[in-house]
Length: 96
Image 1 (spheres, rainbow, N blue to C red):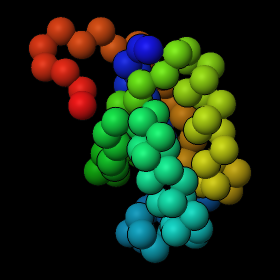
Image 2: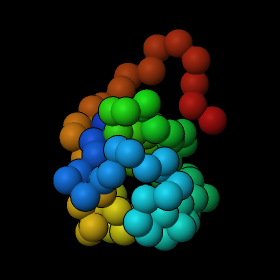
Image 3: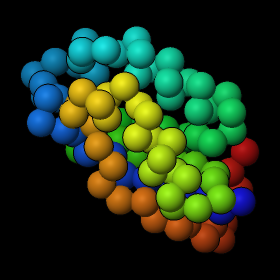
């Protein structure tokens, strides 16, 4: 398995005036992300203040990462998209 850094960007439906947990379908998005973490796909994730989100994931391929994130309820609602998926060769430290 490979480690990837995923940069997600706010979509056109994201309202920057509202906190993240007050965006449309927040409970569904939170449950989806928690599920990916429970499966071991998402190792770490969180918002980048005003810039979207950063995810550290473990997967076989970039395509697998993109396919899994396409199922996020926020993706369907244009609240959050994938900007970049980058292979990360960790040299110092190790993901859990």
